[in-house]
Image 1 (cartoon, protein in one colour):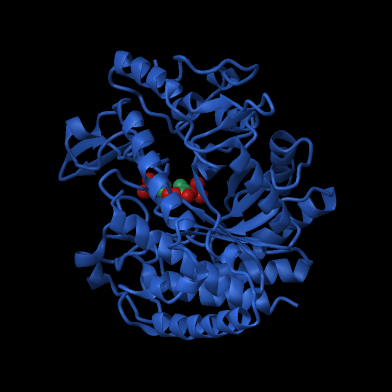
Image 2 (cartoon, helix red, strand yellow):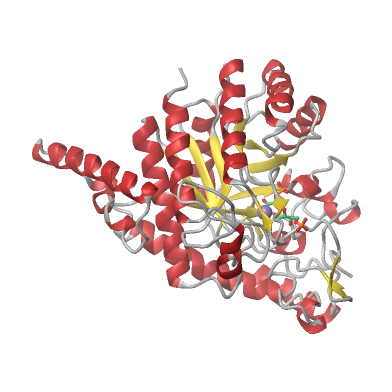
Length: 453
Ligand SMILES: O=C[C@H](O)[C@H](O)COP(=O)(O)O
Ligand SMILES: C=C(OP(=O)(O)O)C(=O)O
Ligand SMILES: [Mn+2]
């Protein structure tokens, strides 16, 4: 039975209480013995992240909550096993680094860099099934559960996929660490991150900013400045903590503090569909030390937000809790103010982040799940306007994006139209900003951040 096996997972009071609670969006594993052996093996594998890194991230997020840093979180809607190639991973990391440079330079503010990467394999779905040409099969729930291919074999829920997800996360993280610690992310290579991407307006704008940074670095170098700090960047891994069998098996007790950390990623978030207060996801995540995010859709009330704070951040610990609002461009100016006001009046300090993607999903006339770049931008603008009017800090941006030249979202300065989807649509779940749309977004946010006062 799913959710039943603790395998060899470390024991700690409360870590298995979620098993007695209602839970949604979980697989029904097709083979119980495979499930049991997979969970057992997972619980014996090394942690993917170190608890000390998780603590560092909490400190960084605390700064963002105070308005002293900005969080940039981006990556695929659904990572895939096949997509974990060096080219795709490096294009995504380079794009996030480029966006971060634009933000740091434009807004004169430290930027916390975080991928929806190295673990973003589980997807909640609006429907359990999918029907094509009269054939109905289980919906695709992410590579950690089943395959995208539309056959009964591929769509069966196969628990051994959790092991593949672990190993794919490990190799992705290994490459990310190599890139960001091994010299590739050195700010003096700011031009090189632009190489290999096609020419376009955002690309040219980035080149010109990179020239300014180059000039400033050369000037400082000739003044004798020490650039050791520019060689490496911190880069954190995050994903939606949806599949609790997996998250539980990777939860370990930190030898320094004796406390539980979910070592599948640095930052974990709870999705809009699984954030019910008395249910399994909130309970489980309330018991691990990682910084936690919660997605908040347009139906969230101020009372909901306060109850989530009490449950997930009872000690009001700086950096512990991030609210990722995904209201939709049409709702944000009306719905966000009451939430922010209620939280601020309670004295709690959370980090407010905008996800301008998930409230703006539409179907294109030719049948693709897409988003209009203008709607995405409008939600970002609304987010900044609301926080400005309330005197609170718009602390981060959460986007579905890729470093590849895909055609999945409509519009942008070098516009994508729906015909382009026929060749360029690659996502197995939600549409992502492509490389140029991502850079364009970064310039817009940098402008909004620097114009705040
Ligand atoms: O992020 C993913 C989607 O928004 C979520 O999985 C729901 O998608 P669906 O409506 O296509 O199932
Ligand atoms: C499913 C997702 O988001 P939400 O929970 O906000 O719908 C997601 O981030 O891919
Ligand atoms: Mn998504």
